[in-house]
Image (cartoon, rainbow, N blue to C red; front, side):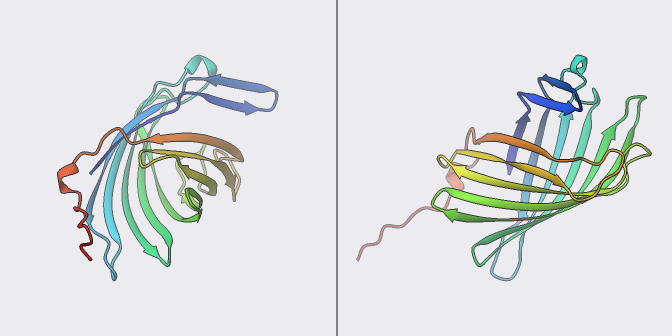
Length: 196
């Protein structure tokens, strides 16, 4: 079980000559793995998250509405590569009330390059949401660096593979992931000293 809090502390969006900056949205969620990975099967997990509209609306950031995401996750390590496939359903709050829904599939592959440095590539496709948001395919390319077991730094870019109303274009990001605590330390496998 994992509990997660995602905070967009600083957002900067440019559209032509106009740039909006400010505080972004926050989301909280949980992920539960119900099947462990084995030599012949992937790990399976279910995740849920809810976005809270904390973005600065006066700067035109965020929708001001609550969103929810339900995700089924399958992951497997193959020859040192971590392969993750997700299927998600998004419930997106709309300005005039109610919500619209869309599906998303994701294929992500990551691998350690050297020491604590790693790379990740991801391709994802979203179905049609509404008249203002077409279906699209996008990609993410990133580098990660594990500062410690609890701290990971990442940076990369989103590259849109299709275009149309509501389809994302190119953008860059950087972030820090920090693990606050271990929920079940007593269940961690114990290391047995080699007596030879």
